[in-house]
Length: 248
Ligand code: PGA
Image (tube, rainbow, N blue to C red; front, top):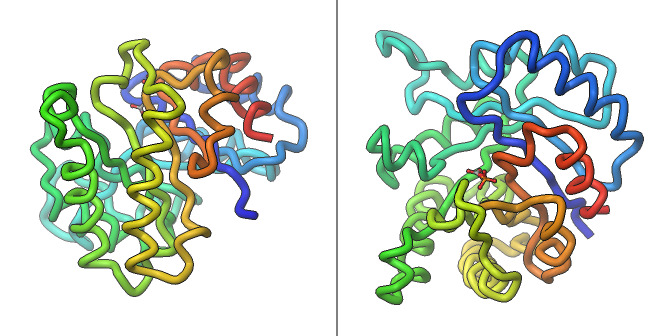
């Protein structure tokens, strides 16, 4: 069975002192987790967190975004090769906050996935519907459309990705999808992956959206929920550690 993955998405939070305190507290409490664990700090702190994690096998480094371009005149972008230089193992791609605020399209997301894979970085590809789309009964259509763009461009190595189902209405709202709501969408995504690769069972499909210490165990017990992408609760070491323990 594939190991579960718990990834912390720090978003645009933290600073040198806060990062150090958080990582040291995580390392002090984590022991030998049964699942894979990653933290995704903002890009300027990747070097700092890489050094803090050096020597730890328990926690790996992730980034929150990657350029869809390889190199060159793209002011402000950070390439996959640059992330790789700092020991980045995972990269969140297509988070709904980027789709919404940075106008990232399905095609942009697919290109970013391609860049990450080419650099040997595992993309964590986010998909998810807005509240309005859910209310209009479009959830399946939306998540399938978002994933199919990624499959279309990266079909040959699609089993190398991680998918994160993050209903937009559940992100940062405290309103979590129920375990059965989440499982239903995860099953749809699994079926879509099965049509693209014989290794679909190996692809980890994470749930994200107000996952916390109290609700993690029940979500992670669902057959197609293979881990979590954790925002708010990843900034508090005790909460994040409880979620890691729930994934054991
Ligand atoms: P949240 O964020 O846990 O704060 O809802 C999850 C995410 O956006 O990845």
